Length: 439
Ligand code: NAD
Image 1 (cartoon, rainbow, N blue to C red):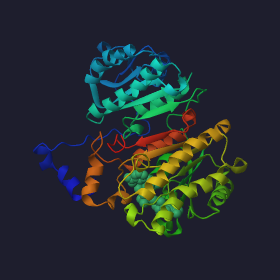
Image 2 (cartoon, protein in one colour):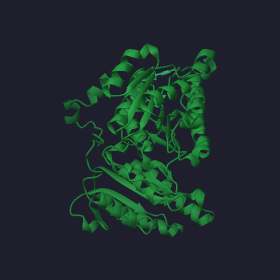
Image 3 (cartoon, helix red, strand yellow):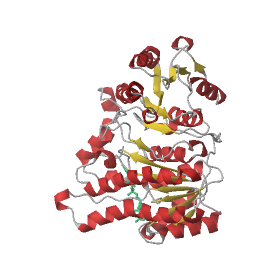
Image 4 (cartoon, rainbow, N blue to C red):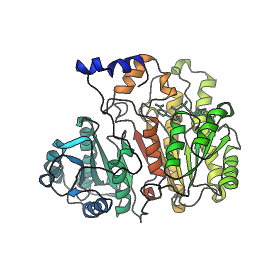
């Protein structure tokens, strides 16, 4: 919290007189367990047994009913993937409600379902679709930093379900709430819990500051060698980030026609290849639609969208991005919900979402995944420039009642970059604390 009102709200006096305080979110630190209280795993679905096993193998305590837990519950994993009739949904309430009552601060609820898009029976589709309504509503009811998210499996997706459940239980997903992630069928990879990106080479654009700098830090912390890209005018800050993470700096404007080729050349010649690309560089040039000039319109479309389309051609051409590679784009909830004064920005970020869904299918056979994260209100220099009242509303209008940190976006990107997240592609993961915008 960077401004006067936030300081005032968080002051000891405000706390004494009962001004509601946002909960300090549990954020991931390497070596910390996914969850340090018992996890209730229940439900009659296809994944409950294998998930319990994986959780126990990861050192967690699992219980099959709330009575088995002595004290509080750290997380509730409810597998409704085999529910076929609305009647079956009551199991959520019967199994989940007593556990949610005992859910600890920063607890987690993860529901597993079957992706309705893979079903044809109308009743089954309706039943599985209903899970989304439950989870999104529950996310709005939970307090004290707890979150609720939904994993939708496509076929035999045990490996993908485990990767997604692991993300949602851990502090990596601190600011991800009320979201749906679809996981494909397929074999999984057991990620190293501390260095899941070991041996990978990652490029991060817009890495000199803000969210991009934290993406570079988190990817490097997880074992990747990072190439940090930003405009020449940000050269000093860029060099500092690159040095800090033990990577290399590459001064480039992402809108230049040869940026993709230069990134590939640099990554191959300096680091021997390229495995992860994070398209994070972005700008805003806000103006109401009726007053929008050509310069504001085209600069935003060019930096935020056209540059990514252009770079991807070079990155995907001639096997530059390795098999099993990862592309993660930074979109925005403005690309989902729209935002006043941001027709240009909303267009660019919605375009990014379109790009991700279309490209994912085209590179699936190379084992490359393409995803986007859509941040909500994140505390950066970009949001510090928003007028005071709008900023304070943006910061608090979400289920977690606070702004996110750049690290929260970075953690979601780091998860999508893991080898173990191979089953997640063509997805848009909102990192917005379940913002009421576009909810
Ligand atoms: P920021 O302005 O703090 O940082 C953006 C970085 O991108 C800067 O270092 C800048 O120099 C770089 N950049 C801009 N144009 C470039 C170009 N042509 N070539 C190379 N680098 C360039 O912004 P941020 O808040 O850290 O945002 C990062 C990304 O997250 C952006 O895509 C933004 O749209 C998105 N986003 C941010 C928020 C938020 O709340 N901060 C919310 C939603 C989405």
